[in-house]
Length: 618
Image (tube, rainbow, N blue to C red; front, top):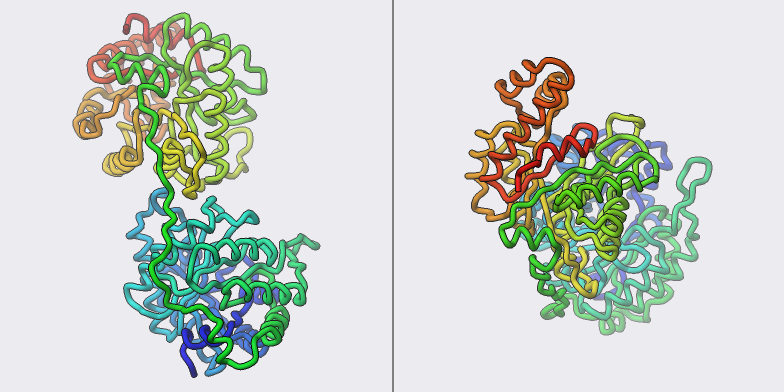
């Protein structure tokens, strides 16, 4: 049998279709691990492979798309990783015999890696490496890395495979209908980068049908000399009586296989919804379109081993100087001590009372209002909307909390660009907490990135580029703030993450409320290397019960016993509230000598209480 490289130099090869689709049609529920079936139902997996081979597939992919440690751990199967991958390769090898090549299928980890997530590139590489080791042991002929959205992640996968094997690698990204990846990276950037990283073939798969994929292939052909691969879905799925049905006919898929061949595509197959009948029609179309004589086909094919990749690097623009970004940034750059007060978004859409309170704070000399994102459960005005209204109508700057919760990367970028267009400049970037309680206890949360990744996103916008490396025109001028919890249960981990935020481009630190000055002073010594202005959070207790609640039931909070004793000794509700203000004011006066500003938040957004705390701090 010829090698894979010899085969694609001689003819266009047909890859198989959707293993998941076929298993689903056989009654395997989607909440099961398809990869584990290599151990539990190997005969069923082998039967699917054989159906695709009988249909004419030249390449079959192992049933290991999700067989990495991260995804298997969600099913409690991480310890079976090696056995699942080795079995997947051997089942495919037994089904293929000498009739087809066996491709070790590796998909994304299902988590975000740096700079968008907390998993390091080296960690991702290690995860891919153990899967690749097992697939090589099982006897694959090549690797297909598929359905990746992140260049950093697929780069880690390529590096892992290359570190142990010189087998061919087909590296495939997944794109939207506009040709860009799900993170917005255009083919003009990802194709040359995959070539540079060492992919043998470069391609696209999943997400879209044949027509938009052809447009993407044409754009890829223009920027890389590598052979290409194309594995579209069988159209967009439609919900028919509770089942996702892909409606592209086999004949339609086959007509596009012929068009793919005209653009240096040497591997054609299908992804979701592609059945053996689709593959049979694709194989027939390719045979009918092939030039007569293998030598003619080989002469027309471009060389597999290409020269140096074509450069297509995004150009980062210099950021706007910090002191020009906002009044708050300018005052901090000058060393001015600043004061802030938290302003909670109201229920409903009537913003005028909150705007009026912001005006009062401006008249009092407060430098900024701190607007939390999703602090309370229920239907409240969005923090972004309130920040825009305050900026436009109240004559005071805002520090907008912007969280990752319930937003994907593309939505985050759209939100931030819109906020910038409407005048918001100061941001506090946080991961956010899932809404497990409140008016909607069944509400879910989405976390595409965490606060470290979010800081990288905003820093990229400040250099005139989106996360996909495309220019956005003039750079944004966001003043980037990050949070820090001096009372974190695992302070070493909190500081490790803080250093990542600093590296990503943080310019300002806002702490969680401080109740223990000794602990905070020790923390300052550990972060002085960052040389960032620090605004300390202060919170006045309203009662002894309020103090005990915060001390015992709010995670990541430490209230010293002497502070609790002061609140317990207060006699009556008014006296307790006054004592809470006195404690917070004492705290703020001491902090005045240690930090660059103070921000006061209260239990119910009580502006008068907050002003009582900052009285006399100037």
